[in-house]
Image 1 (cartoon, rainbow, N blue to C red):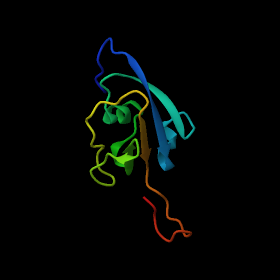
Image 2: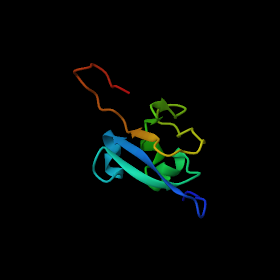
Image 3: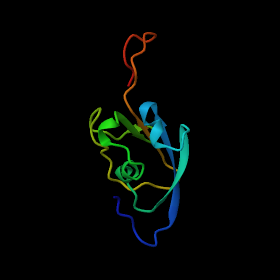
Image 4: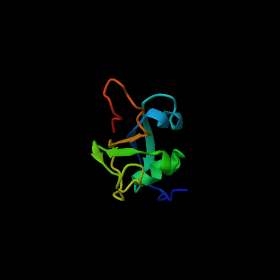
Length: 102
């Protein structure tokens, strides 16, 4: 369970879930989540109850925050108001592209 600061001011961040991870959200691709100050991306993964081994890619404001595909979310810097986190499960094979797209 993530540890949050008591009496922290809540802030809103945007969460985007792709592919097999959609089931961990409210049913749509993107949504706003209110979190206290001091929250880091790994706290969001825990809060949404996403198993770490199901995350194949993660981005913070469009920048990769994973040490490897299928690895751990490797970003310990606190989130700021209005930031965007995106998480993706494995991308299914596509004959149109000829290979999995990550």
